[in-house]
Image 1 (tube, rainbow, N blue to C red):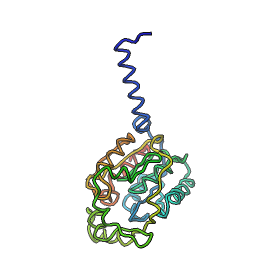
Image 2 (cartoon, helix red, strand yellow; image 1 turned 120 degrees about the vertical axis):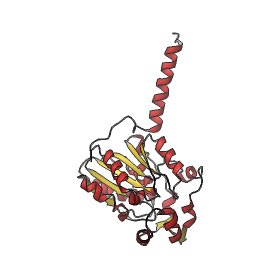
Image 3 (cartoon, helix red, strand yellow; image 1 turned 180 degrees about the vertical axis):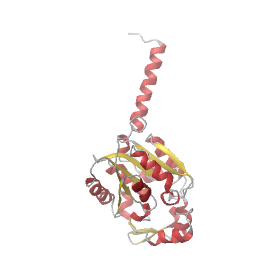
Length: 259
């Protein structure tokens, strides 16, 4: 049967739209399920207290909040720590990750309790993707030069922490954050995700426009690829501390509730 030009064009556009949705996930087409639980996961150079500015804002909105203590050992062990917390939630839960813990959100986010994902200046790999190779396609952020190792344990030196990780935070406060920095194991960096939860869960992304730890254009690429609801915050890598209001609002939006 012959297909006229108009019919062919319509079919072509429909096919392209379907391809776009399948390649970017479903965030743009599926509203979030209402959730009362939020699970927060921290990344490198930090501990669970890095969410201390966001947590009270979420609690004031009536949300049940838990901050995971990421062991920073291996990716499977870090994912397992998040999964144990997700197992304890009593219903739909928004899973939020900062920085490296975007790897954990991407993997653990397939958990049945997870209703939506929020990435805060975070890694957002595809399944089996080599994130390090992806990051190398963008200019190297300055903080990378400040990573030092003591055997198998890595950390960020103080100068890089204050300048490139927490650059928009008052120095006295940034030094407190530096003091609670937890070292990570080299093996953690070699892990790959086997799932990409953002392909099946509504996703949200906060880009830090002044980020010197993850390239902001890489953040924009990952957010666009997943079809995430995206905001841009004029902040360092630690927007969750220097700009907690927009970060909290984005998380509340992901719960499907109003403030």
